[in-house]
Each structure stands twice: as structure tokens, then as C-alpha cells.
Image 1 (cartoon, helix red, strand yellow):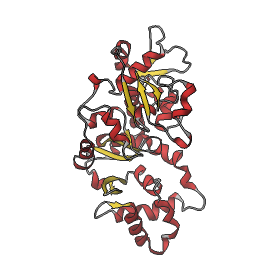
Image 2 (cartoon, one colour; image 1 turned 120 degrees about the vertical axis):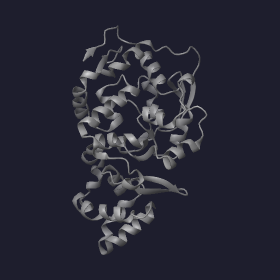
Image 3 (cartoon, helix red, strand yellow; image 1 turned 45 degrees about the vertical axis):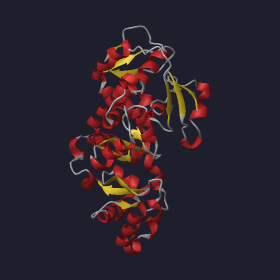
Image 4 (tube, one colour; image 1 turned 180 degrees about the vertical axis):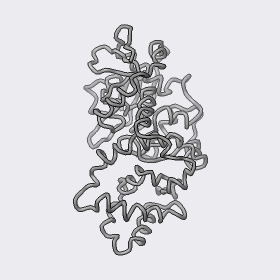
Length: 337
């Protein structure tokens, strides 16, 4: 690890660099939706319109069909549950990284709500229901209700305890996605459809990378777009516990550089190869105004949000029950809703 050897950077430097890395400058905008989704480490997709608006801000001449074609025709992007246990759109080729880096996060932490005593155990779900879901999807992608009905018929009299597991908040289909069995397919009208991963993306091999390498790669991807960032920031963004993030940083230390920032007590990290770009960042001296949708990646990158908003205004944007308000961004900082 090489320690940063210039004076502590002002917080404005973090704001400028973050703004630049999110392709929000006109000259930084891209033409590829896949490139943008990959660089941002995924597009939040809990709400149907969010990824379209996020790309509209960052891709030249963006049209909605550009995302649809990448998702459902080219299949260069895939929609699945990802960081923090939430739906994201990521490059299909990166799926092995996200899957292996985050699988244990879900089953040991975010997915613990499925361990309720009145629900079938994970062992029972794995023995019975997971396989029936795979069987039900053998012929074609299915809507949630179609899939649950077919799985129930395959289970026959054993289906009653499983009915609640097919709810719209994810349930069993979130679990099978983290197991690498299912992904989102092209919608059936306005309804979500699900497919077997091995049929939707037969070229993707999840076992090509182990957890340690996957987590190190994911850390570097994150820091390339969201750095300089702390271990707490990485944990907040990914859902991986902070104690485990610290171990990942330690394992990756040879490729990182520590950045000192004024009035910041946490250690902030950035990939070594990005250090020169960080020090030379200088935004155009004109007003840069953007309208960010709810849950835009820019709003979800850090636990410490000092670089994008005054602490006194946090509760106006980051609302109860995990709601994050659509925001007006001026020169990299949130100025209103």
C-alpha cells in the first residue's frame, strides 16, 4: 500500500471526481448502455423506470429500446438480485463476479428473514421446491403466478407451506437467483417473467471464479467508480459486513492507494491506477444540472454522503422504509427534490 503523498484533499475534490466518474459531464457521456451499467457496478432496478432514467442522464442519444435490446435480445445485460439484496441490471459477463462475491452475503445476512420458524427450512426448500422451480421452467420463461402454480402442481399435496414464498417482494425467486438457478427474462406484457439461468445465459459459467477472487474484483470495480471510499462505504453499498470488507481491502492492498480528505477520520481507498486522474480532476466552470430518478446509483454509493449532500438535508432525500427520493443535482451535489 502506498500512502497518498499530497496535502489532504478538500471534500469538493471528492464531489468533482465522483460526478466525473458517473458520466454526468456532457463530454464524459457514453454511447453504450452496457459500458455504463458495468462501470456503475449495476443499475438499480427495483422500480421499472429507474434504469431508463439513469441511462438517459449518461448515454448520448439514449432511447428506451437500447436497454431493452441489451437485456432481452443481445442478453449482454441481465436483471437479477444483486448488491444489498436488491434488483440490479449488470453486464451478463460480470454475473460470476457478483454471484460469488455476494452469495454468502445473502444467505448469512440479508436473507435471514426466510428463516422464520413457521416456514419450511432451507434444507427442505432446497430438497423439494428449488428443483420443482427448475423443472417448471424447463420449457419456457414463466410469470410469477404461472411459475408458482406449476411448482405447486409438481409438489402436489406438499405445496401448502410454500404458497407465501412466491410473493412479489422476491421470496423464493430471490433465493434461487442467489443460488444461480434463475434470472429475470423478458417481461410478459407488464408482468415480470423468470427463466432458468442455464437457458437464458447458457454461456455463463458461475464456477469460473471463487469467492475470494470475486470479492477482490468487485471491490476494485466499486472503487474505480465510487472511490475514494471507506470500508464502511463498501459495506453500505454491497451489503457485505464491514468486518469482511476490511479483509477484502487487506487482501487487495497492493493495488490500492490511501487518500486523505479534510475532516474525514475514515481511511479512504482508490485503485492505484486511478490516482493520477483523481489529482487532475477539474470540472468545467459552468452550472451542471441533472434530474436523478429515485434510487439512482449516484445516491447509493456511500454510507457517508458528505460529498453529495449536507447532513442537515439527509432526511429529505433518504426517507423511512428505504425510500430514496428523486433529486435535483447541481454541480455534483443534491440541491432539491
